[in-house]
Length: 207
Image (cartoon, rainbow, N blue to C red; front, side, top):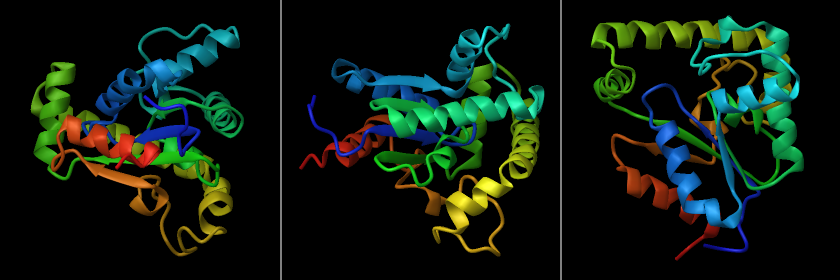
């Protein structure tokens, strides 16, 4: 598509059912001929584990509580380092946008879906579960992940978010607050193609 981009890397964050994985797949396809490479959080963790000689099986579709703090921290800091030192990465995970705070040249995208019933329906169709189970799992994963990450990253929140003035000291830690992001896309209001076009416009300023 283009030889020159306004950003070196892209992060995609969003809670389950928000459309973040769909955006990753769309960007992978749209940008593949220009050397962009995309990873989901689980895919990135698998690759990291292999490089470290660790035996991690399954699709890693898990809550953060399934792995020890030091392992998650190593993976997350490796992701941040990649954003700081390399280019043309598309990294999709719950925390990728937070990990990209104060990293120059990274477009931080927040995916959201303002209609909860649509989010639930997407999870039902993706995972083949009942709506009640989808809601229970969605709530459980959010609570477990958010609680662990608030504990793990309270110092980084101060350093990366509060000190630069993105959020106030009195604000609660919220890794998906829209002020942490460059582009917020509501997939209830925008379809897949419209959402993709907004991102392509942001990285190319295509008129």
